[in-house]
Each structure stands twice: as structure tokens, then as C-alpha cells.
Length: 247
Image 1 (cartoon, rainbow, N blue to C red):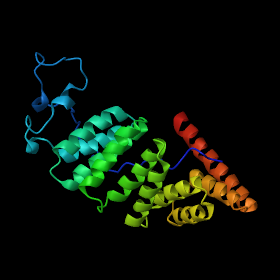
Image 2 (image 1 turned 45 degrees about the vertical axis):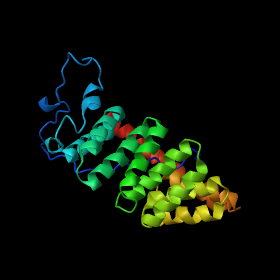
Image 3 (image 1 turned 90 degrees about the vertical axis):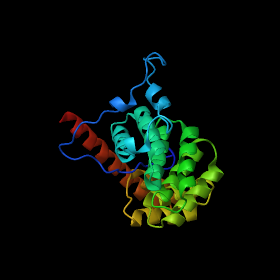
């Protein structure tokens, strides 16, 4: 059964691009720097020189930068995503866009296993607004990063906060169940996994962790059934990946 940990951090969907859409340029002319002042081979020089003193806020489309960052995450270019999302947060005049950028930046760092940077990004997002539409994602993602950083007790606190903010957040229930199970509270964990399943979050990880919790409370037959179902789901997912690769 799975013991890989809570479900991975999620990133938001963003606004996306039209179809067809105009190409975007991460280094437009207004962001040019003087090569005499900086090393032209430094890939981070543009990000390092972007600040409010040098570029007017209204000259940068923070929402488009947010979409750029999310698109980078979709294609698993997480280092580029962190740079774009940093810029989006820096130039956002809207708290919602800034908070979403920080949440996604945290997710990108977590994908790179840079968990301290992820923790800092999620906390920055929550500093902006602890009750917004993005706060539940920030809380559950922060729980995931804290757990990976060896801070399980703090992780549970933030996982509980996530479902308090949004009781219909299935990933939050799954993560809370995982942390409860890690602390030996198997019955409470089963209830959390049931909530996640009722909310439509049915995948191999949820089923495997629920099976593990059922084993802990002595319900071996139900645990075995769920483990078999989880294995079937995982096999089906792997088959789809192979078919997609062959195409």
C-alpha cells in the first residue's frame, strides 16, 4: 500500500490562453538590461533586476505573467515557473492575483523539492488573506511542504485549517486523513478519506491510504478490497499513459 505521503500540492488553473493565441515573450524590450552592468550569461539577471523602482507597475501584466507561470508548471518547467510567478506576485496590484501567484510559486518549489522556499511562499500567500478562495489551497499545500520538511505536527494543524476554510475541498480532507493516520488516529483518518471520496476525489492514493487505515482498526477484509481496487485504478492509469505515449 502507498506510504508516499499526502497528495501533492496543487496549482491553480489560471485563465489560460485563447486558441489560437499570440506567443508570449518573457523578455520583452521594456525589460532589457545594460549588458555593461550585468553578466549577460546570468539566466536570472532579468528577474533580479525587476523591481518597482525600475519598472512601473502598470507596464507589467501580472495576470498574464501568472498564466505564463502556470503554463510552465503544466509542462514541468518548474524553475522557469518560479521566476514568472515571482514577477507576477511582485507586480500584481490585485491581492487575489498576488496571492494566487504565491500559492503557485510554492507548488513549483515543492515540485523541485525546495520545501523551505515552498513554505515561505505559502506563508506569504496566507499573509495576504487567510480567508480567501485561495487560502484553503495555500493551507493544504503548506501542510504538504511542512510534512516533507519533517514538521508533521504543524502539517496537521494546517491540514485541519484547510478543511475548516473549505469543507468541500476533497484534497484537503485526503491530506488531513493522511496526517491523522501518521499520528495513529486511524478511525478519524477513515472518516476524512470517506469525505474525500464523497466529494469525488477517487484515485489509487486515496483508496490505498484508506485501506491502510482500515487495516489499523482491524477491518482487514474491507482493506483488502480497497487495495485491490486501488491496484486496478493504478494499472488503468499506467495503461492510459502508455497508449498516449504510443500515439
